[in-house]
Length: 190
Image 1: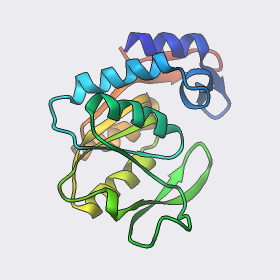
Image 2 (image 1 turned 120 degrees about the horizontal axis):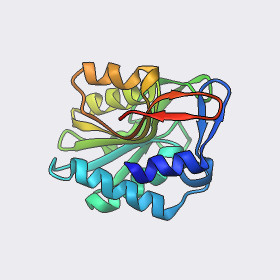
Image 3 (image 1 turned 180 degrees about the horizontal axis):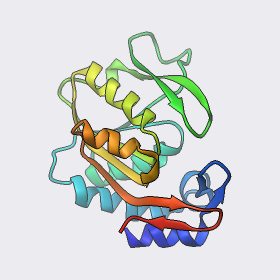
């Protein structure tokens, strides 16, 4: 998606450890025009799949999933990174290691919000090593729901998570795939 690639080139910041910061428009300060374009792009890619539920993980995926759900006219649910006192005990759960935060979390989704009738599209801001998506895939499986695919805003193609998921037969559609990063250059897959 050229629009997104242009935003990354213009506003993205590369930090040590292959960290791409897109805080100014995607996952800290949220630009509604960028979100609108992302939602429309995911609808173009998955609009014929009869999606009934959008699933993401907190926190950065929530805004993107909510806007995308609006285009699909379906609910969005997010996996919480910790069990809160008001969520109850009837939960699906999965362990997830966060590359960015460098720690493991047990993510949870209330069984009230995901069922065997759901056709789930997973949405997330980044795909690096694929651990968050594997955790979300596990939750979809625990619910007996059908995983339609994964819509990713930015994939770090050089980190292998996308390849791993695709090798498992999961449909992964990324709006921007980065092949390489240096301290001040981002190279996108052609």
